[in-house]
Image 1: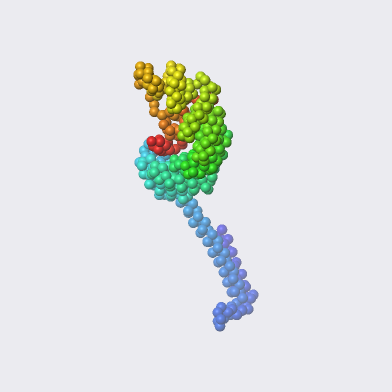
Image 2: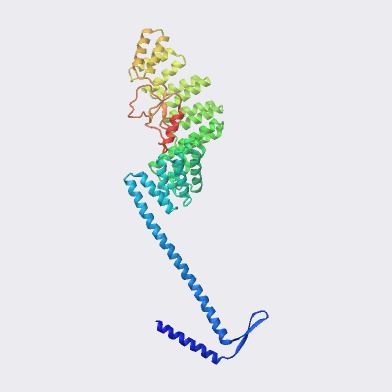
Amino acid sequence: MTRFLLLVLLLSLVFIVKLFEWNPASVTFTYFPGHAMNVPVVVLFVLSLGVGAGFVMVVHGTGDFLRWLRSLDETREEKREEKVTALWKKVREELNRSHIPQALSLLERLVTIYPNHIEALLLLGNLRRASGDTSGAIRLHRRARVFDEEDVRLILSLCEDYRQASRFDDELALLGEYFRKKEGRNVEILERYRDRLVFMKKWEEALSVQSVLSRSLAKGERRDLEVATLVGIRFETGCLHLDRGETELARRSFRGALKIDPQFSPARIGLAEAQAQEGRLSEAFATLEEGYEKDKDLVYLYRLEEMVLEAGSPERILTAVERAVAGDPQNSSLLYVQARLFDRLMMVDLALDRMESLEGRENWEGEFYRLLGDLYLRNKDRSSALEAFQKGTHAENHPGRLHCRQCFRRLVRWSGRCPSCARWGFVTLHPGYVLTPSIPEQSADGRRGKGFPLADPTIDAYSLGQSG
């Protein structure tokens, strides 16, 4: 090959010499104003060829140089990737052995070598949080989100960082930002956002999130639970409007909940309270009576009794209870409700007759015998009163006429949502006799109520703390 190139070079030189002999003419070449020189035509031709060849060589040489630089970078990147892969493997091995400090050290080296390694930043942040360093975890997870803002794992991890650092407003802002950008795309984030809003009692915002969440699920048990939660949040939104005096908005919210679940007693009771607040007492009474006729839930009679007596219309509750007893004359709980009503209205003889007919039918709690003893005293039968009071001391005693069908917590005041188990629609009137905890007490139609277990454990703790 070398000999061939030398031969070509020699032949080229001979050809150039011959060109000088064949073309003796010259031209005037002005290379600057006022400066010129005579240049043989052949020299001008050879210079042109040389310049062109040099330009081609520069272009090709630059391309080759750039390709060499790229290959050098690729080689370095491959070596770095190999080192990162080896470190990542060691990290997993240390974690499998529960060697957390060693894993942390390796992860620190890894993110130093590869600053945009999202998996390493995510894991390192989680380990920092687990060790109590929430500030370090927040810093690392924020750093990782620079490379991928939409990674669900990073958002959830950062939310957990904020939660453990008690930075609930920051968590809420992060979830709200994602919700506005990616509405309805990730059920887990929607669920967490809903739980945080419920935790902070932001019912109107929670309603908008829950509406999207319930629509994003396919038909099935999970969707039924979320729809039940939607009903509960609609009820709370109605209560919020009612507290503000916005009775029309409150009625819309309560009716919206009843449209989804016609058996949801808190919404019907809330609707009656809104009507009463507007001065439409007759409609409020009718709403509660309609609720009892539909569901046979004694809580309607309890709320009707309170509302009617406050309005000074005792005949309305007497008629309602008599009609209920006529429809179910063997219902001990209902008969006990009637006896207590008679006592409250100072109808002592009727109350005593009803109580005596109930004694021995159920395993009554202490409150039953205290009421019976008090009636005997007012009837001047001291021996029977003493006997009743003695039975009351040996019976179970629990404060509160209401209870939750789900967790059996006793309540003094009615609430649409149990403060203990955080479920809606389970609070009802206690029957007055001892219940078996393993089998939740049902209403006459077998309905147990609806609700959902909160996904965020901090919410349960918060609810328990607020219930007093």
